[in-house]
Image (cartoon, rainbow, N blue to C red):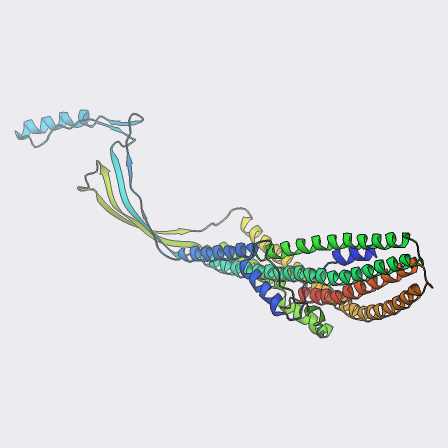
Length: 448
């Protein structure tokens, strides 16, 4: 019985498709408050901002770009223009008897401008740029993939909350079984005390019965510890105070619904599983990346732009205004086989995702098939467990009557009592096992 009890406590549970307003309220609270889902929502918001940034690249870009330069030393531009022209100018002045030709100084200018400013506005607008166009398409697809990822996590949160809730209910049902068994053992102790008082038995039967009660109390203590652990975990999933009480829907275990046919379940799983939607989106991203590389190999990038502002020595702005316009084209004509390699690399990535998609499809169909057959087997096992409980209880009544009449020894009574506990636990496990298998089928089929 001890091994079965441990199995009962540790038996993994999963989400169930059966309706329960209480459970559904916990699921909705978890979907709203779970910290992991909040992070995914923030990731989606970040993806939306990436789309806004990609759209901004289609708009003109205006930049205010002032700068001021101080310089000392460095290279100089020296040109003896005064030495060359001044003698000629002097001769011309003498011949014309005027001063129309002034003297010119030699040029001795630093190449690094000192006290120089360039205060301007720059303008640029892309006329044709394949990178901008396809980057926007890729960012939109990445947003779709991020949303699919969030829905995958939502399915996991739903699964985990239902798992924890069923575990909690299971410990409550186990508590009822052990409480009934303890009452039975307590009555057994009283019965032995009467037998000893009537000199029908010795005191050792009392001690033995009391020892059985203490062993059961130890198991109940472990059960209570596991129940508190499950409660804390369930509250953690819903981002609540860890010791918040859980409302129990004790009728949930009796809500065993009908199961659809296996072909329909497979078809629904292939339509609903967000892992496939994420892969479809990633394949679409790869196709866009291929088009991007192909267009880059065939099309140039064209833009127009310009600048306007003030430029000169000293911040005077007098006679320093200027304006200029630009039209530009950028086209990589040849760079080895880089362009062909990038196109081929993008195609290989798409082939990898296509293969992964096919693999995941087969994995999902395998998961659904396994979950379906396990559920059908668990339904058959419940009938066997019910029969076992009924037989164990009848057997115990016979042994108990014999023991009261002195026709059975104590070890027979205890064995019959333990078999009743074991049978009831087995039936409880079988009931929850149906919920487990149905839940696993719902999970792999992405059924909400």
